[in-house]
Length: 350
Ligand SMILES: [Cu+2]
Image (cartoon, rainbow, N blue to C red; front, side):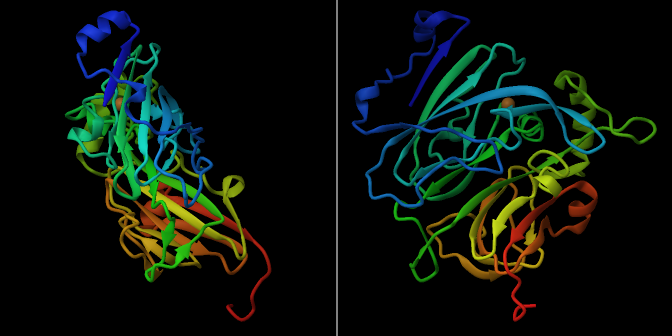
């Protein structure tokens, strides 16, 4: 279901132009809740399980086109983002809830955008229904019928779809089972913390000397960037939009004994997360919670165009690197995060 309001044409004209069924707030007699999104690696406040019935959860995603620095040398891309972060914020609902998203494309932007939800059922995941030019906004509502972590991304069509995705426009929605996560025997699982790690591949053109070129305008970078993209060899593979975004002072935190849910998304390319010195106690490699998790995992696989989830209880203090175990990508291209874990050392384990 959809409504659209256009700053360009005014509401009356928009109603004529887009003759979609009237969007009556009363058509679903369900409670409504406004979600407050937060920038990754953090995740909006949510309940891990609920006894309440389904509701309509309202989200607003604002598209922000802005220059984004993606490495420590200051290489700048003309970023396109949901809510200003790469990846976009993680949305959380429960299975059976209705997701109602207002997608805002401010008049200050220059491009048309939309959103394709892999969690949604219906043509193009809502992308066609949410096409918004600068100065427009659209409201899309879909029912979250399957549990799991799912990608959302911009999909304006043709080569613009990968251009927008590799410029930053993807994120994840987590649809939790109403009674929460469960192990392979159906026993409830809980987490003390949840982190959302969004992996991106960037394709930055180089100058005659081999140095990365910086751009602020997408129109300016696109022809060169398409050349790099066609070689399928990214210049950067990073977490949270930048080399080093989750290392050093920005390392993810946890304590010994805490259970951490790590959600990992990759909208465009395959990845192989590995926690150096730890494991995946429970891993939903394909990210879909109706399937039993695999236990005691070493390295798991995130297919391009999907998100996966891993649950791990830290047992030892220290700094744990979380990498894609293509070690070239982890060390030379940027795909490394750190978990800084505090607590008491266990001599028995090491
Ligand atoms: Cu877009």
